[in-house]
Amino acid sequence: MNQDSLVDENTSLLARSDSRLNADLVYTRFSPSKKRLILALICWNGLLSFFVGGVFTVSIPNIARDFGTTTDIVSWSISLCIVSGACGSLLGASNSTYYGRRPIYLIFLPVFVVGSFGVVFSTNVWEMMFFRALQAFGASPGMSVGGASIADIFPVEQRGFAMGTYMGICLLSPSVAPTLAGFAAYYGSWRTIQYILGFAGIIGFFAVFLLFPETSHPGSLGKDRAVAAGKPGVAFVNPFKALGILKSPNITFTKFGISNQVVIGLCFAPIGFGNIIGAPVAGRISDHFVVRWKERRGFWYPEDRLRASIVGALFLVPLSTLAIGIIVETIPTPLGLTLVMVGMFINGIGVDLVMTPTGAYCLDVLQNRSAEVMAATSAFRALVIGISSSFMVPMVHSIGSGWTNAVFSLVAWFGAFLLLVTIHHGQKLREFVDIGYSI
Image (cartoon, rainbow, N blue to C red; front, side, top):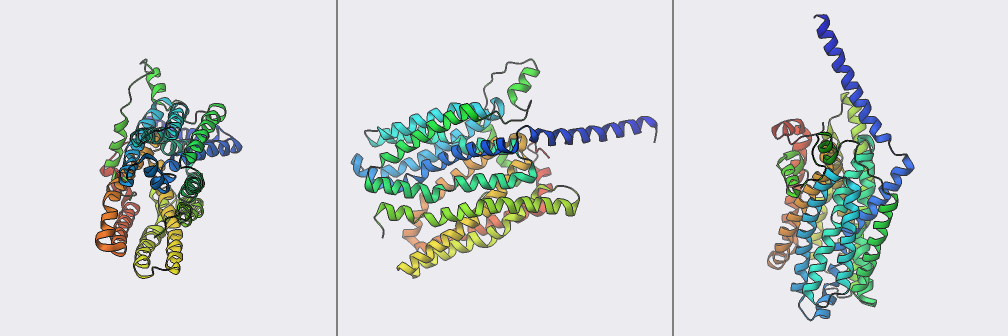
């Protein structure tokens, strides 16, 4: 080996060492207290996006009665909001990669506020649907851009816990949102909760304006690279380009009698409490797996984080779903309702044991496109939910709750199988379809 080769090799090693050092230093830009403040603001705005859907379902009978229409027509707004939210999430995420996280919040939050107050003052069902769609559109970046900001400020060893905290707070909505909406609809008006959401959006806007810094890594934004290359800093960003991320198997394989409105709302509480408990625990466990397997291997293998999802994917989610269906069919008593709520609590924990590590994993492998991967996976989930919800009720009427839940349990087990494939063959899958991974 000649001297020139030694120089080249040593230079390469030093460059890699400097690169790793810079990668670590970028996470020290904000103090721990500042990171907690940023995380709190992210959670606030993420919670708004979850509340938009969570407050609506229990109010459907009241809305239909108020507008003199049917519950079926009012229910159309659910699908409309899913589509609007998915489009908004893609638009916000792709532009946050180019222009930054902070501008997206400052642009979309006013849209959310206008949509919320528009719903309040709607005079017919069609106005309500329009403003509901606008509301969902304005709230949508809360999830995708929020996850991207977490990836911006937390290193991989801390990202799971931060993501778990974020998901745990956001997933308060399955318990809190229907309960609040139920109380508002029963004791007042369904419009009251929309007033609250509008004012919450105003608070979120001013909090971001005054306290939220730009979190993206210096020089990483598209506009920064464009200016450095002598090009205009303003450009059109294709929002649907993010969907190309779904061609990666690594990303796609990880995603899969009461009339009182108050009581209906309270029935959602167990799954929400399960989410609250499960998300931070799942995040901490996934970080533990990352550190432990990194020490064992001597290097970081991103799919090790997914090992924290195995119990939830293989057992808690499918078995609780199956049990709930069987109980509904065989024990139509207060005891049965109690057992169903226990099953929902377990299901809430299981879902978080799957979603939190897989969400953090997506950020790990595509940190340079973190907002886009969050938006793409959210859009994929919205598509699956929109399709499945359209035939879920007919299935229950046709074959019963037991068999319907059995079908969805099989779907959950298939998802667990894909998860195991990703864990054991993640490197090969990443090489099979390379979408520009950051590792």
